[in-house]
Amino acid sequence: MTAPIAAIILAAGKGTRMKSDTHKVLHPIAGRPMLLHLIDSVKALGAAREVVVVGAGREQVEAAVASHGAETVHQAEQLGTGHAVLQAKEALASFDGDVLILYGDVPLVSTATMHRMLERLHGNDNPAVVVLGFRPLDPGAYGRVIADPSGRIVKMVEFKDASAEERAETLCNSGLMAARASDLFGLLARVGNTNAAGEYYLVDIVNIAAGDGRASAVIETQATEVTGVNSRGELAALESEWQHARRQQAMVDGATLIAPETVWFAHDTQLGRDVTIEPNVVFGPGVEVADKVVIHAFSHIEGATIATGVSVGPYARLRPGAVLEEGSRVGNFVEMKKAVLGKGAKANHLTYLGDTRVGAGANIGAGTITCNYDGFFKYGTEIGEGAFIGSNSALVAPVKIGDGAIIGAGSVITSDVEADALGVTRASTTIKAGWAKRFRELMLAKKAK
Image (cartoon, rainbow, N blue to C red; front, side):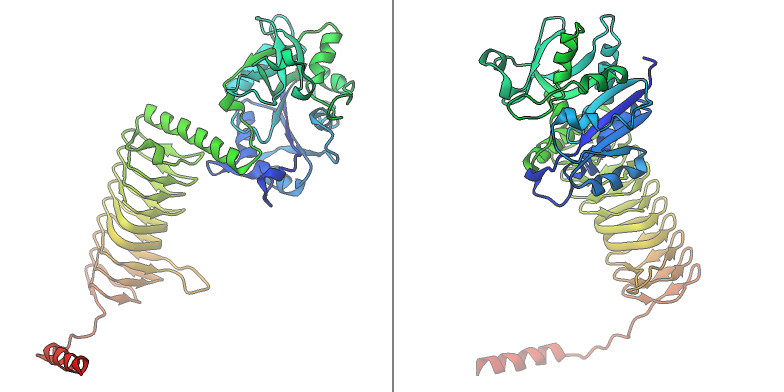
Protein backbone atom coordinates (compact mmCIF):
# COMPACT_ATOMS: atom_id res chain seq x y z
CA MET A 1 0.00 0.00 0.00
CA THR A 2 1.37 3.39 -0.99
CA ALA A 3 -1.75 5.57 -0.74
CA PRO A 4 -1.90 7.98 2.21
CA ILE A 5 -4.25 6.98 5.00
CA ALA A 6 -6.88 8.97 6.88
CA ALA A 7 -9.10 7.79 9.71
CA ILE A 8 -12.58 9.09 10.46
CA ILE A 9 -13.44 8.28 14.08
CA LEU A 10 -17.07 8.59 15.11
CA ALA A 11 -17.47 9.99 18.62
CA ALA A 12 -20.65 12.06 18.47
CA GLY A 13 -22.97 9.80 20.47
CA LYS A 14 -24.32 10.95 23.82
CA GLY A 15 -23.54 7.73 25.67
CA THR A 16 -26.57 8.12 27.94
CA ARG A 17 -26.34 4.55 29.22
CA MET A 18 -23.00 5.37 30.87
CA LYS A 19 -24.84 7.78 33.20
CA SER A 20 -21.73 9.93 33.44
CA ASP A 21 -20.60 13.52 33.11
CA THR A 22 -17.53 12.16 31.31
CA HIS A 23 -17.95 11.59 27.59
CA LYS A 24 -18.32 7.91 26.78
CA VAL A 25 -15.19 7.66 24.60
CA LEU A 26 -13.07 9.22 27.35
CA HIS A 27 -13.76 6.50 29.90
CA PRO A 28 -10.50 4.61 30.43
CA ILE A 29 -9.33 1.14 29.56
CA ALA A 30 -6.09 0.28 31.40
CA GLY A 31 -5.75 3.88 32.56
CA ARG A 32 -6.10 5.49 29.11
CA PRO A 33 -9.22 6.94 27.51
CA MET A 34 -10.76 4.60 24.95
CA LEU A 35 -10.49 7.16 22.18
CA LEU A 36 -6.76 7.62 22.75
CA HIS A 37 -6.18 3.86 22.55
CA LEU A 38 -7.72 3.99 19.09
CA ILE A 39 -5.81 7.09 17.99
CA ASP A 40 -2.54 5.44 19.05
CA SER A 41 -3.34 2.40 16.91
CA VAL A 42 -4.15 4.64 13.94
CA LYS A 43 -0.88 6.56 14.35
CA ALA A 44 1.03 3.27 14.46
CA LEU A 45 -0.45 2.55 11.04
CA GLY A 46 1.20 5.70 9.71
CA ALA A 47 -2.00 7.63 9.06
CA ALA A 48 -1.62 11.13 7.68
CA ARG A 49 -4.91 12.43 9.08
CA GLU A 50 -7.26 11.62 11.95
CA VAL A 51 -10.67 13.31 11.93
CA VAL A 52 -12.87 12.83 14.99
CA VAL A 53 -16.59 13.47 14.53
CA VAL A 54 -17.93 15.08 17.72
CA GLY A 55 -21.39 15.97 18.94
CA ALA A 56 -22.75 15.97 22.48
CA GLY A 57 -20.00 16.79 24.98
CA ARG A 58 -17.77 17.94 22.14
CA GLU A 59 -15.67 20.22 24.38
CA GLN A 60 -14.37 17.25 26.36
CA VAL A 61 -13.42 15.28 23.25
CA GLU A 62 -11.85 18.28 21.53
CA ALA A 63 -9.68 18.94 24.58
CA ALA A 64 -8.64 15.29 24.83
CA VAL A 65 -7.46 14.99 21.20
CA ALA A 66 -5.97 18.46 20.80
CA SER A 67 -2.47 17.41 21.86
CA HIS A 68 -2.58 14.26 19.71
CA GLY A 69 -2.79 15.99 16.34
CA ALA A 70 -6.34 14.88 15.55
CA GLU A 71 -8.86 17.22 13.92
CA THR A 72 -12.50 17.44 14.98
CA VAL A 73 -15.68 18.11 12.99
CA HIS A 74 -19.10 18.67 14.49
CA GLN A 75 -22.23 16.60 13.84
CA ALA A 76 -24.94 18.92 15.11
CA GLU A 77 -27.79 16.44 14.58
CA GLN A 78 -27.60 12.71 15.21
CA LEU A 79 -29.01 11.39 11.92
CA GLY A 80 -27.16 8.10 11.66
CA THR A 81 -23.70 6.73 10.96
CA GLY A 82 -23.75 7.65 7.28
CA HIS A 83 -24.59 11.24 8.16
CA ALA A 84 -21.83 11.26 10.79
CA VAL A 85 -19.13 10.17 8.34
CA LEU A 86 -20.34 12.74 5.81
CA GLN A 87 -19.44 15.51 8.29
CA ALA A 88 -15.76 14.80 7.53
CA LYS A 89 -16.18 15.54 3.82
CA GLU A 90 -15.05 19.15 4.02
CA ALA A 91 -12.08 18.37 6.27
CA LEU A 92 -10.89 15.74 3.78
CA ALA A 93 -11.82 17.68 0.64
CA SER A 94 -8.23 17.72 -0.63
CA PHE A 95 -7.34 14.25 0.64
CA ASP A 96 -6.65 11.60 -1.98
CA GLY A 97 -6.02 8.26 -0.35
CA ASP A 98 -7.58 5.49 1.73
CA VAL A 99 -10.05 6.19 4.52
CA LEU A 100 -10.71 4.02 7.56
CA ILE A 101 -14.02 4.49 9.36
CA LEU A 102 -13.68 3.70 13.06
CA TYR A 103 -15.66 4.20 16.27
CA GLY A 104 -14.40 5.90 19.41
CA ASP A 105 -16.23 3.42 21.62
CA VAL A 106 -14.64 0.44 19.84
CA PRO A 107 -11.11 1.05 21.13
CA LEU A 108 -9.24 -2.23 20.82
CA VAL A 109 -9.19 -2.81 17.07
CA SER A 110 -5.52 -3.41 16.32
CA THR A 111 -3.18 -1.72 13.90
CA ALA A 112 -2.68 -5.13 12.25
CA THR A 113 -6.41 -5.49 11.57
CA MET A 114 -6.59 -1.97 10.13
CA HIS A 115 -3.69 -2.91 7.88
CA ARG A 116 -5.51 -6.05 6.71
CA MET A 117 -8.55 -3.94 5.81
CA LEU A 118 -6.46 -1.62 3.67
CA GLU A 119 -4.61 -4.49 2.02
CA ARG A 120 -7.95 -6.03 1.06
CA LEU A 121 -9.08 -2.68 -0.35
CA HIS A 122 -6.19 -2.91 -2.80
CA GLY A 123 -6.86 -6.55 -3.73
CA ASN A 124 -6.93 -7.68 -7.33
CA ASP A 125 -10.73 -7.48 -7.45
CA ASN A 126 -10.60 -3.79 -6.45
CA PRO A 127 -13.52 -3.73 -3.96
CA ALA A 128 -15.40 -0.47 -3.51
CA VAL A 129 -15.64 -0.93 0.27
CA VAL A 130 -14.06 -3.31 2.78
CA VAL A 131 -16.17 -4.20 5.79
CA LEU A 132 -14.79 -5.68 9.00
CA GLY A 133 -17.05 -8.54 10.06
CA PHE A 134 -17.17 -10.76 13.14
CA ARG A 135 -19.15 -13.67 14.53
CA PRO A 136 -20.35 -13.00 18.10
CA LEU A 137 -21.70 -15.77 20.31
CA ASP A 138 -25.03 -13.95 20.22
CA PRO A 139 -25.55 -12.04 16.94
CA GLY A 140 -28.55 -10.31 18.52
CA ALA A 141 -29.44 -7.02 16.90
CA TYR A 142 -26.22 -6.53 14.93
CA GLY A 143 -26.48 -5.75 11.25
CA ARG A 144 -25.79 -8.75 9.04
CA VAL A 145 -23.28 -9.22 6.22
CA ILE A 146 -24.49 -11.55 3.48
CA ALA A 147 -21.41 -12.72 1.58
CA ASP A 148 -20.31 -15.54 -0.70
CA PRO A 149 -17.49 -17.96 0.30
CA SER A 150 -14.85 -15.68 -1.24
CA GLY A 151 -15.86 -12.78 0.99
CA ARG A 152 -17.63 -10.86 -1.76
CA ILE A 153 -20.58 -9.05 -0.18
CA VAL A 154 -23.97 -9.83 -1.67
CA LYS A 155 -25.91 -7.57 0.67
CA MET A 156 -25.69 -5.73 3.95
CA VAL A 157 -28.75 -5.19 6.08
CA GLU A 158 -29.55 -3.67 9.46
CA PHE A 159 -31.23 -6.05 11.89
CA LYS A 160 -34.39 -3.93 11.99
CA ASP A 161 -34.77 -4.27 8.25
CA ALA A 162 -33.60 -7.90 7.90
CA SER A 163 -35.78 -10.83 6.94
CA ALA A 164 -35.91 -13.97 9.08
CA GLU A 165 -33.52 -15.69 6.65
CA GLU A 166 -31.08 -12.78 6.79
CA ARG A 167 -31.22 -12.69 10.59
CA ALA A 168 -30.14 -16.34 10.61
CA GLU A 169 -26.76 -15.26 9.18
CA THR A 170 -24.02 -15.22 11.89
CA LEU A 171 -21.57 -12.88 10.13
CA CYS A 172 -22.17 -9.44 11.62
CA ASN A 173 -21.14 -5.94 10.70
CA SER A 174 -18.75 -4.29 13.17
CA GLY A 175 -19.37 -0.92 11.53
CA LEU A 176 -15.67 -0.52 10.71
CA MET A 177 -14.97 0.04 7.01
CA ALA A 178 -12.31 1.08 4.55
CA ALA A 179 -12.81 2.89 1.24
CA ARG A 180 -11.00 5.24 -1.07
CA ALA A 181 -11.77 8.88 -0.41
CA SER A 182 -12.60 9.27 -4.10
CA ASP A 183 -15.41 6.71 -3.67
CA LEU A 184 -16.56 7.29 -0.11
CA PHE A 185 -18.14 10.72 -0.15
CA GLY A 186 -19.83 10.23 -3.52
CA LEU A 187 -21.47 7.06 -2.23
CA LEU A 188 -22.47 8.76 1.04
CA ALA A 189 -24.17 11.58 -0.84
CA ARG A 190 -26.56 9.01 -2.33
CA VAL A 191 -27.54 7.36 0.97
CA GLY A 192 -31.20 7.85 1.89
CA ASN A 193 -33.11 7.36 5.11
CA THR A 194 -36.01 5.20 3.96
CA ASN A 195 -35.69 2.55 6.62
CA ALA A 196 -37.20 1.50 9.95
CA ALA A 197 -35.20 4.06 11.96
CA GLY A 198 -35.37 6.95 9.48
CA GLU A 199 -31.57 7.26 9.64
CA TYR A 200 -28.79 7.51 7.07
CA TYR A 201 -27.02 4.17 7.38
CA LEU A 202 -23.32 3.92 6.57
CA VAL A 203 -23.81 0.31 5.44
CA ASP A 204 -25.92 1.50 2.52
CA ILE A 205 -22.79 2.57 0.65
CA VAL A 206 -22.08 -1.13 0.06
CA ASN A 207 -25.49 -1.69 -1.48
CA ILE A 208 -25.25 1.50 -3.56
CA ALA A 209 -21.84 0.44 -4.90
CA ALA A 210 -23.32 -2.95 -5.76
CA GLY A 211 -26.05 -1.21 -7.73
CA ASP A 212 -23.30 0.49 -9.73
CA GLY A 213 -21.83 -2.93 -10.51
CA ARG A 214 -18.96 -2.60 -8.00
CA ALA A 215 -18.55 -5.35 -5.42
CA SER A 216 -17.42 -4.89 -1.82
CA ALA A 217 -15.60 -7.36 0.40
CA VAL A 218 -15.66 -8.46 4.02
CA ILE A 219 -12.79 -9.68 6.16
CA GLU A 220 -13.28 -11.18 9.62
CA THR A 221 -11.77 -10.63 13.05
CA GLN A 222 -12.40 -11.88 16.57
CA ALA A 223 -15.43 -10.45 18.35
CA THR A 224 -13.34 -9.18 21.27
CA GLU A 225 -11.42 -6.85 18.95
CA VAL A 226 -14.54 -5.02 17.82
CA THR A 227 -16.43 -5.00 21.11
CA GLY A 228 -18.08 -1.65 21.73
CA VAL A 229 -18.83 0.09 25.01
CA ASN A 230 -22.23 1.55 25.79
CA SER A 231 -22.52 0.97 29.54
CA ARG A 232 -20.41 0.62 32.67
CA GLY A 233 -20.88 -3.13 32.55
CA GLU A 234 -19.56 -3.30 28.98
CA LEU A 235 -16.63 -1.07 29.99
CA ALA A 236 -15.73 -3.47 32.81
CA ALA A 237 -16.03 -6.46 30.48
CA LEU A 238 -13.70 -4.87 27.91
CA GLU A 239 -11.22 -3.95 30.66
CA SER A 240 -11.25 -7.59 31.71
CA GLU A 241 -10.57 -8.72 28.14
CA TRP A 242 -7.69 -6.26 27.81
CA GLN A 243 -6.17 -7.29 31.12
CA HIS A 244 -6.41 -11.00 30.29
CA ALA A 245 -4.56 -10.48 27.02
CA ARG A 246 -1.89 -8.30 28.69
CA ARG A 247 -1.27 -10.86 31.43
CA GLN A 248 -0.81 -13.59 28.86
CA GLN A 249 1.62 -11.42 26.92
CA ALA A 250 3.59 -10.62 30.08
CA MET A 251 4.12 -14.32 30.73
CA VAL A 252 5.00 -15.00 27.09
CA ASP A 253 7.63 -12.24 27.39
CA GLY A 254 9.27 -13.85 30.43
CA ALA A 255 7.53 -12.57 33.56
CA THR A 256 6.18 -14.83 36.28
CA LEU A 257 2.70 -13.95 37.52
CA ILE A 258 1.89 -16.06 40.57
CA ALA A 259 -1.85 -15.38 40.33
CA PRO A 260 -2.33 -13.75 36.90
CA GLU A 261 -6.01 -12.92 37.36
CA THR A 262 -5.17 -10.64 40.32
CA VAL A 263 -2.56 -8.47 38.56
CA TRP A 264 -3.75 -5.27 36.86
CA PHE A 265 -1.64 -3.54 34.24
CA ALA A 266 -1.78 -0.05 32.76
CA HIS A 267 -1.72 0.55 29.02
CA ASP A 268 2.02 1.38 29.06
CA THR A 269 3.46 -0.94 31.73
CA GLN A 270 6.93 -2.15 30.73
CA LEU A 271 8.35 -5.35 32.24
CA GLY A 272 11.80 -6.87 31.89
CA ARG A 273 12.75 -10.56 31.88
CA ASP A 274 12.52 -12.79 34.93
CA VAL A 275 10.30 -10.36 36.79
CA THR A 276 8.17 -12.02 39.47
CA ILE A 277 4.84 -10.45 40.36
CA GLU A 278 2.96 -11.79 43.36
CA PRO A 279 -0.84 -11.60 43.79
CA ASN A 280 -2.88 -8.40 43.92
CA VAL A 281 -0.38 -6.01 42.38
CA VAL A 282 -1.76 -2.94 40.56
CA PHE A 283 0.19 -0.92 37.99
CA GLY A 284 -0.87 2.62 37.18
CA PRO A 285 0.43 4.46 34.11
CA GLY A 286 4.10 5.20 33.58
CA VAL A 287 5.84 2.19 35.15
CA GLU A 288 9.12 0.72 33.87
CA VAL A 289 10.40 -2.48 35.49
CA ALA A 290 13.83 -3.89 34.62
CA ASP A 291 15.02 -7.51 34.80
CA LYS A 292 14.98 -9.78 37.87
CA VAL A 293 12.68 -7.59 39.93
CA VAL A 294 10.37 -9.07 42.56
CA ILE A 295 7.14 -7.23 43.29
CA HIS A 296 5.50 -8.69 46.36
CA ALA A 297 1.78 -8.91 47.00
CA PHE A 298 -0.62 -5.99 47.39
CA SER A 299 1.74 -3.34 46.02
CA HIS A 300 0.49 -0.33 44.03
CA ILE A 301 2.92 1.20 41.55
CA GLU A 302 2.42 4.27 39.35
CA GLY A 303 4.86 6.50 37.48
CA ALA A 304 7.86 4.61 38.88
CA THR A 305 11.14 3.37 37.43
CA ILE A 306 12.48 0.15 38.95
CA ALA A 307 15.99 -1.07 38.14
CA THR A 308 17.45 -4.57 37.97
CA GLY A 309 17.30 -6.76 41.05
CA VAL A 310 15.01 -4.54 43.09
CA SER A 311 12.52 -5.94 45.63
CA VAL A 312 9.25 -4.11 46.25
CA GLY A 313 6.66 -4.74 48.96
CA PRO A 314 4.53 -6.38 50.10
CA TYR A 315 2.04 -3.55 50.60
CA ALA A 316 4.32 -0.91 49.06
CA ARG A 317 3.08 2.19 47.28
CA LEU A 318 5.28 3.78 44.64
CA ARG A 319 3.92 7.08 43.33
CA PRO A 320 4.99 9.16 40.31
CA GLY A 321 8.66 10.06 40.31
CA ALA A 322 9.77 7.11 42.40
CA VAL A 323 13.07 5.67 41.17
CA LEU A 324 14.55 2.51 42.68
CA GLU A 325 18.12 1.92 41.61
CA GLU A 326 19.79 -1.45 41.18
CA GLY A 327 19.46 -3.85 44.10
CA SER A 328 17.53 -1.48 46.34
CA ARG A 329 14.58 -2.55 48.43
CA VAL A 330 11.35 -1.12 49.76
CA GLY A 331 9.34 -3.29 52.10
CA ASN A 332 5.92 -3.43 53.70
CA PHE A 333 3.94 -0.22 54.07
CA VAL A 334 6.59 1.98 52.45
CA GLU A 335 5.49 4.89 50.28
CA MET A 336 7.69 6.81 47.86
CA LYS A 337 6.83 9.91 45.84
CA LYS A 338 9.28 11.84 43.64
CA ALA A 339 12.10 10.08 45.44
CA VAL A 340 15.23 8.16 44.46
CA LEU A 341 16.42 5.14 46.42
CA GLY A 342 20.07 4.59 45.56
CA LYS A 343 21.84 1.39 44.60
CA GLY A 344 21.51 -1.21 47.36
CA ALA A 345 19.69 1.17 49.70
CA LYS A 346 16.89 -0.17 51.90
CA ALA A 347 13.66 1.14 53.38
CA ASN A 348 12.15 -2.03 54.78
CA HIS A 349 9.22 -0.95 56.93
CA LEU A 350 6.59 1.73 57.52
CA THR A 351 8.36 4.65 55.82
CA TYR A 352 7.46 7.70 53.73
CA LEU A 353 10.04 9.14 51.34
CA GLY A 354 8.82 12.23 49.50
CA ASP A 355 10.95 14.64 47.43
CA THR A 356 13.96 12.71 48.65
CA ARG A 357 17.25 11.38 47.32
CA VAL A 358 18.73 8.44 49.20
CA GLY A 359 22.35 7.52 48.50
CA ALA A 360 23.69 4.07 47.70
CA GLY A 361 23.77 1.60 50.57
CA ALA A 362 21.83 3.79 52.98
CA ASN A 363 19.47 2.18 55.49
CA ILE A 364 16.17 3.85 56.33
CA GLY A 365 14.79 2.58 59.64
CA ALA A 366 11.17 1.66 60.32
CA GLY A 367 8.80 4.56 60.80
CA THR A 368 11.03 7.16 59.14
CA ILE A 369 9.27 10.11 57.53
CA THR A 370 10.66 12.85 55.33
CA CYS A 371 8.54 15.88 56.18
CA ASN A 372 8.48 17.51 52.75
CA TYR A 373 5.42 19.77 52.91
CA ASP A 374 4.71 22.80 55.11
CA GLY A 375 1.16 23.30 53.87
CA PHE A 376 2.26 25.63 51.09
CA PHE A 377 5.49 24.37 49.46
CA LYS A 378 7.41 21.12 48.95
CA TYR A 379 11.04 20.79 50.03
CA GLY A 380 13.74 18.23 49.39
CA THR A 381 15.70 15.85 51.61
CA GLU A 382 19.13 14.40 50.79
CA ILE A 383 20.40 11.29 52.53
CA GLY A 384 24.02 10.41 51.78
CA GLU A 385 25.62 7.13 50.81
CA GLY A 386 25.87 4.61 53.61
CA ALA A 387 23.87 6.77 56.01
CA PHE A 388 21.84 5.05 58.73
CA ILE A 389 18.51 6.58 59.73
CA GLY A 390 17.25 5.20 63.03
CA SER A 391 13.68 4.05 63.47
CA ASN A 392 10.86 6.52 64.04
CA SER A 393 12.85 9.51 62.78
CA ALA A 394 11.40 12.62 61.16
CA LEU A 395 13.61 14.51 58.72
CA VAL A 396 12.17 18.01 58.33
CA ALA A 397 12.99 19.30 54.86
CA PRO A 398 14.93 21.03 53.53
CA VAL A 399 17.65 18.99 55.18
CA LYS A 400 20.77 17.08 54.19
CA ILE A 401 22.18 14.01 55.92
CA GLY A 402 25.80 13.44 54.95
CA ASP A 403 27.51 10.26 53.77
CA GLY A 404 27.92 7.70 56.51
CA ALA A 405 26.00 9.77 59.07
CA ILE A 406 23.86 8.11 61.72
CA ILE A 407 20.54 9.48 62.94
CA GLY A 408 19.51 8.19 66.36
CA ALA A 409 16.13 6.50 66.66
CA GLY A 410 13.21 8.79 67.45
CA SER A 411 14.98 11.95 66.32
CA VAL A 412 13.40 15.00 64.71
CA ILE A 413 16.12 16.46 62.48
CA THR A 414 15.69 20.09 61.44
CA SER A 415 19.22 20.97 60.37
CA ASP A 416 21.92 19.38 58.22
CA VAL A 417 24.03 16.55 59.63
CA GLU A 418 27.56 16.34 58.32
CA ALA A 419 29.18 13.18 56.95
CA ASP A 420 30.01 10.47 59.51
CA ALA A 421 28.39 12.47 62.33
CA LEU A 422 25.70 11.37 64.79
CA GLY A 423 22.50 13.39 64.73
CA VAL A 424 20.14 12.83 67.63
CA THR A 425 17.35 14.78 69.28
CA ARG A 426 16.07 12.91 72.30
CA ALA A 427 15.01 13.88 75.83
CA SER A 428 16.84 12.10 78.65
CA THR A 429 15.08 9.11 80.16
CA THR A 430 13.73 9.50 83.70
CA ILE A 431 13.42 6.31 85.78
CA LYS A 432 11.41 6.21 89.00
CA ALA A 433 11.96 2.94 90.78
CA GLY A 434 8.81 1.20 92.01
CA TRP A 435 6.46 3.82 90.56
CA ALA A 436 4.58 1.40 88.31
CA LYS A 437 3.89 -1.01 91.16
CA ARG A 438 2.59 1.75 93.44
CA PHE A 439 0.40 3.09 90.63
CA ARG A 440 -1.18 -0.32 89.99
CA GLU A 441 -1.89 -0.83 93.71
CA LEU A 442 -3.49 2.59 93.97
CA MET A 443 -5.73 2.10 90.97
CA LEU A 444 -6.80 -1.40 91.97
CA ALA A 445 -7.77 -0.08 95.36
CA LYS A 446 -9.91 2.63 93.78
CA LYS A 447 -11.54 0.14 91.49
CA ALA A 448 -12.39 -2.18 94.41
CA LYS A 449 -14.39 0.52 96.24
